[in-house]
Amino acid sequence: MLPPGESSAQTLLAHPGVQRVPSEKLELFQLRAFLTPDMCGELIAHIDAERRPSTLADPNGDAYFRTSETCDLSPDLPVVQELEARLLALNGIDPAHGEPLQGQRYAEGQEFKPHCDYFNPGGRDWEKYTSVAGQRTWTFMIYLNEGMAGGGTRFKCIGKTFQPETGKLICWNNRRPDGGVNPNTLHHGTKVRRGTKYVITKWYREKVWGW
Image (tube, rainbow, N blue to C red; front, side, top):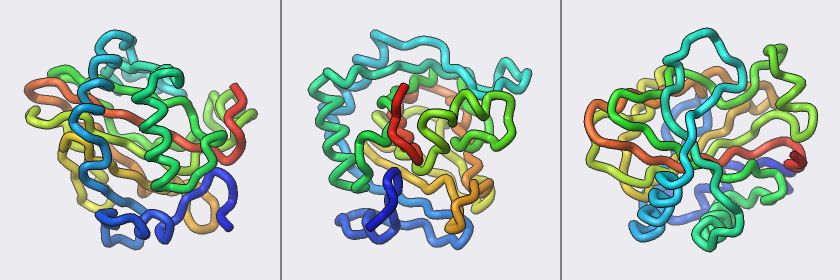
């Protein structure tokens, strides 16, 4: 049995269509058509209605490091409940270990420069962000639209860039097999050169989400 807050390659690859990126440096997967176009359209509408400027856990002095907008999606929305159910069926992670679903909107010229999703051990806000629910374990990200120029997600350490496709999910383990954080998960939400990009992000934690 997997520890709470964890999924595994075996769990994910048991689902039809899941593909693993062939690399020993990190556990990284994709699944096309995870969400229907109708679900994606509904989520985009909620993001547009509720978006706010995105923030950073550890500000680094670069005001242009993350220039997207973020939406905290209500767990009461039927489309959010359906999405959470699909994630559980895919990854087997107890929903109690998940952060609330977030949507992000990237307008033309916006990006999220290379970063890792885990909290930096010893970082300025380490205690603040890990004292209750612990470190982040897995990231699941879903593209809600396509057709923009730019906006890919680039994993520089392995030379792999995912291009946005409506409903496509990518996911990765933020840690190494020994439980330490994996810097090879460094990724870049590249600049949107034309159009608008929408994504959903779901992070999981070592402990129960108790905020």
